[in-house]
Image 1 (cartoon, rainbow, N blue to C red):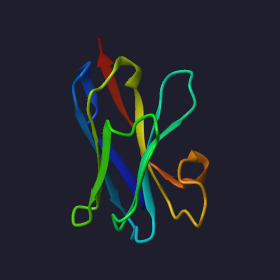
Image 2 (cartoon, helix red, strand yellow):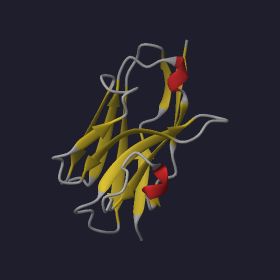
Image 3 (cartoon, helix red, strand yellow):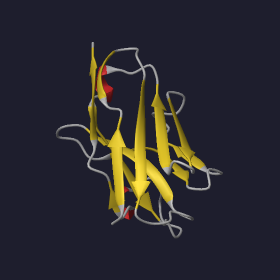
Image 4 (cartoon, helix red, strand yellow):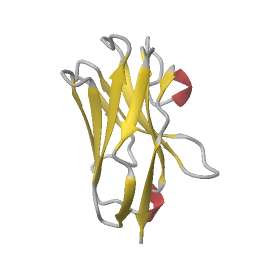
Length: 125
């Protein structure tokens, strides 16, 4: 059974940091991209960052670049996203997802086939 399980969310004060984890299991993710998205109430799911499983290619949303870093540990089959300088508007459910891409737009959530259950991040002012 293919699974992505997020962890690391929680309540943090503005200006703080969090590191989210996405543990992948159930298949080989070679040639896949693992991405992070978020969705706030009443808003569309938003792309944050993605990394090719090999780790040699990363993508970041322009709005988040400089505040987030995506990385992976292939031994642990885990992708991480370090978020710094958090703001109240970063409050959302954060999801990791996987896609085999095949030339499709990495930032489009419709192109991802496997999703985790999400982890809540709440940033207080």
